[in-house]
Image 1 (spheres, rainbow, N blue to C red):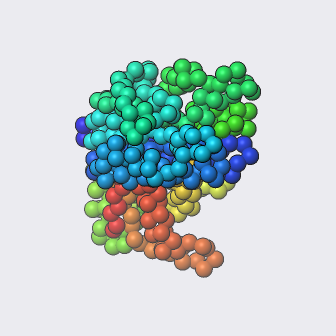
Image 2 (cartoon, helix red, strand yellow; image 1 turned 60 degrees about the vertical axis):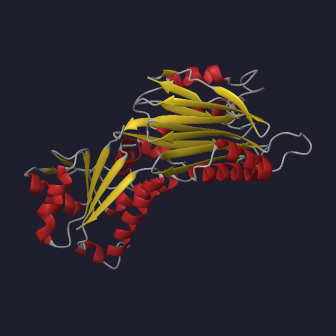
Length: 389
């Protein structure tokens, strides 16, 4: 199943009146696949945040080191405290381990049961329960299919709206019905996670009664995007650079004024420019027949980098770039949502226009933009390759 990959995302909202989230999601990727751990710390605030952080980090680290679930749970039990007043566990957790994009191993302890969608419908996957270190743990092994979706959540999701908009909260069957109704094979893991958490937030009337976290994993086919950014340092390399760029399958994005001009000449096509500013901070796009997207260079890529950093952080700008049609938003959707593998073709030529001392743009800034954007894309789980010319 080498043509498949797994993308992951999560979103949290914090209990009203608290500054820290008592839920924590950790992910680790290695040659075998991905490990995702969602931990829900006892209570809320600082204490819950510490417990959830320790639980998720310990489990992720141990499982990445190929240690058994028995060893992981035993270590958690022996390492972390149990509430003296309530005598209950330090943190509940959900583990989803994807092996070779072929099989899912799900381990659950006291969190709401993972929802699995297959062909857009709820899939009742097998579960086996057994006791580890005095804790009742549920395990599942599932062979994967393309477009399978896994949704893990903290109990803030099923308590959404209790005493406010609903008598008994948003129970799991209602959440299942909601995700089925809103399913689309085009929805990224981030769209899925955001959708469920935003619905919870609405039920809480935007004053969450508990920390609420939803993590989503989606099995999908690999999809490639190719980004051409800047002309080559040596003009003799232009033909090679453009030939390699267009030889790759997938989306083709050309960024930069000079880059657009030489690309149009290479293809023998007209460069059709625009003066319509959809966003005053992002220059207009252009069109070249045979190219999926043509944008301005440094300013647009800088805005994409801003969106990428936010995506890996608070994710507050998600709906901004997800709905707008300026060049930066279109690039963000292609790179963050539509693509799993991204190839950058970066020209090292120095743009004379950028040497104006009144402009805060220079060659080093351009190269730094590429470096930072690539690192942020890797953090998202993308496979990134960069070729310099």
